[in-house]
Image (cartoon, rainbow, N blue to C red; front, side, top):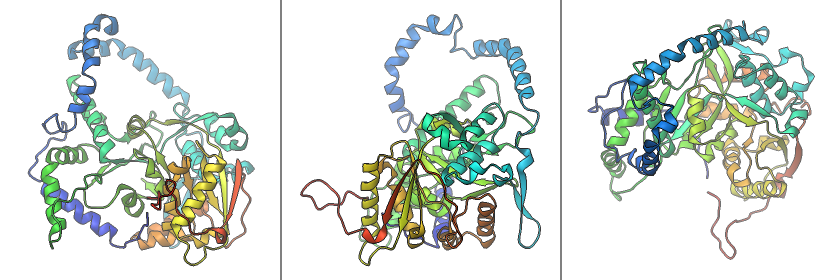
Length: 494
């Protein structure tokens, strides 16, 4: 896959979004409940798959419900009233677990070059721990997230220490909580996720509670902690069908047919984008989800109400890893994990080992990114990187365009790694300017990453980092190659 950095990406998305709004303007929906559409669109298959299980469950209500008719909202309300005192005691217990943010002392201002400040951030250098200087850049992103979200309940100081001591704890397969900055959905897996949230809202309404509590928003347990929103981006890119060809208006005609064919589904998603906070639905015709994520949705650095932190994402598609070429930590997860992250729950993950992949030299003329990717994939498969991060570094990084980096990162599922990560450097900043990010935004990104020791400048002396294992490739050694079944000239790369 070759990626072309288009300066018109933002305008294309805005135009496509306008088409979605105008095409669906006739669908008047409520912000508290989804539109009444045919179950055959997105619920029927789920209902059929659970029909037999539902029958057996209904037959055994007394055994599972402990004497309470769980199908009755009145009975559920009675149960809620009965456990309310217990919940109050738990809340008081939680409130005594932390009286202030454990790392508020390292909250540091990031000044603007012309005066004022971009915001504040949790400074890793302010910890004055020499172990952090040796950490891979990908692990530093996990560390910053743990520090920022440390409430001594979901994320504890012990978890922060595990990450700081990564060199010793990673081989022991310890678990850590991780809260990604955002969630990425595509329409195949995104629609069921929105359906689940809509069902949860209906349940809240039946219980007489506020349905707006069900939102893609990471609320904090304690009032004195900053509540970080979890933006959700859903990109409709799988509805690709060509009905009209060889005419000047083929694109517009196909789009109109697609909106008619998927009217119910698009109406439901439009309701979701209005009903849920921090949810963006990118309409069809804007591009594939991973390129939209790379060119438009990737923030690299968030500025959330004056708090700066690195962008990170989990997506419901294995090739979410393409964003790692932009210096954004991201990988694919299942729908349940994505929904939990949308509701502010941390992901439990094994602290991964990191394979350091050093690149040097320069590709010969005629050697393509495909040749490089296939060579890298072969080396990583032979080395064994399942369940690990791969982090690329070295002087050869300056010879790789961001398109080449994203192509290598996109192949992470093929060589088995959780992600293939390219730390942010000058090539990344140049790409951000090409894709329409403002000069002030790029200055904020560079300033934050430099201040927090997450930026790589190959013009400056490099401090040695520790990796679980090492690989090295001289780009001059890459030769043209193909991949595929035996005696077949078709490339397996896509």
